[in-house]
Amino acid sequence: MFYGWWLVLFSAISLAVMGPASVAVANLFQNPVTHEFGITNSQFAISNSLVLGMGIFLSPFISKKLAFGNFRLVYIVGVMIYGLAYIGFGFAPNMYVFYALALLVGVGNVSTTIIPVSMLVNNWFVKKRGLALSLSFTGLGVGGVIFSQAVTFLITNVGWRYTYLIYGLIILLVGIPIGWFVFRARPEDMGMTAYGAEEPVSLKEGEKEVAATTPPASGVVVTKPYFILLLIGGVMVGLANNGGLGQFPPVLADLHGPIRAATLISLYSAVGIVGKITLGNITDRFGTVFSTIYAAVLLTVTYLVMTLAENYSLAIVMAVLFGLGNAVGTVAPPLITAAIYAPEDFSKAYGYLQSALLLGMTAGSLFAAGVADLTGSYNYSWIALAIASAFIGVSWVGAYRSAQKDK
Image (tube, rainbow, N blue to C red; front, top):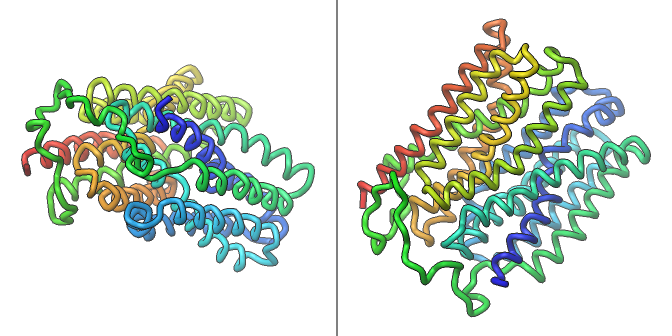
């Protein structure tokens, strides 16, 4: 079997462990931590913002180090920082130490999750890149399901401090061996070539590309229209992604009660696994333009249906649509970057895009809640997020077209 598929498997395993620690399960610690330290929920939320904030500032730097430095060393150091900082949470005497550790967790997260996996897949696959990337990212969904249950069980039975300790050890025990024994930055490091590299490039319908012999945009010029549009689209993805993830749970609980809300959350989380694979396959079969429009339309319709979510049946429809469309937050960014930029420019461009995406994610939930507070209704929030979702398609398709014309 082609070695790249082993990388996909172990990337999924790595993401299943590393990803949920900073996103899916982070808020499960909120109640016990706030109770022990005597702080508010918003004070605890600062730690999550610090984690995302480190990603905003460090993504371009980490991308460069992974691309042009020692990939495995950078990854393993990131795992060690991540795991040890997570263990440190369990020994934190106060919230100020907790905040300092959150900064280190942010460093570990950006060094071990989306960016390195995206770079591996981009280097190892030309053909079926979308499928390989989406299969890798299924680890995020699977890990979220597994660790949300495991962390809840551990907090209940051994307390939040020991739970942080155990999770930190798992990060170290899983991440270090994968980084050292499995991950290889490029197929050339093993005397191989990327999957499909020797096959002719087929042009997808709807993508009027220049000749296949012409390389994608060369150099990351920050004043180019396609670069600006790429970043605008990234911010819109972050807003649309985290606006729903952050505010759907409390709103659905108010509308339908906590039990039905939990069912809906589980539904869009489970559908999200399928959504990632579907989006990757669509990109491989029909091209970047089509898959971008597909995801943008799904998210736009999601938020429009959410305005009618008092009806539980429509809330179910919303959850399915959101699970399918929200894959745009993980699968699409590296694919649109690879479609615009040459391989030697991918890491730099993707680092900037990831910063824009995280900026949007940091603001997403606050934006949705803020609009609701100002207007007195979440329906205005959903309409605003529907507009942001539509701008994903406008921005990224515009970026792709502009890059083609610039050749």
